[in-house]
Length: 105
Image (cartoon, rainbow, N blue to C red; front, side, top):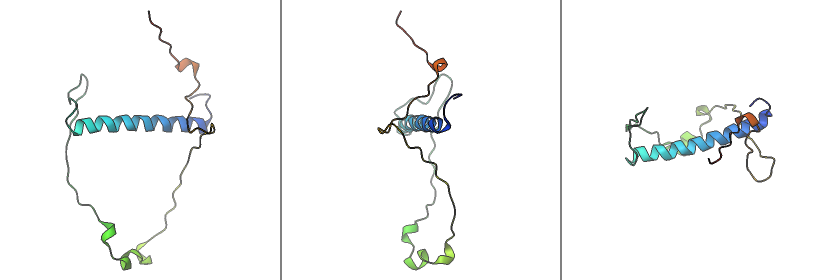
């Protein structure tokens, strides 16, 4: 986005990623449940199931969980986007060249 403020671009991108992730999850669910054909025109979908061992941290005794020798401090960074319009909606990018109007013939 050439003339978009970086904060607005980040907000817009995160909205697009969220929308795409929701669409991906819906499609994935259809494939996993067998409610969508797996053969497309240009692609095929392969669904596989795997088993793996999962560590159950909540089953550890409190003496282990509270032992400081087993813990370390890590620093992470979180970048949060806060909409300025007060309604929680992110504006679409303002690019006239990205706008295509289709009118009925």
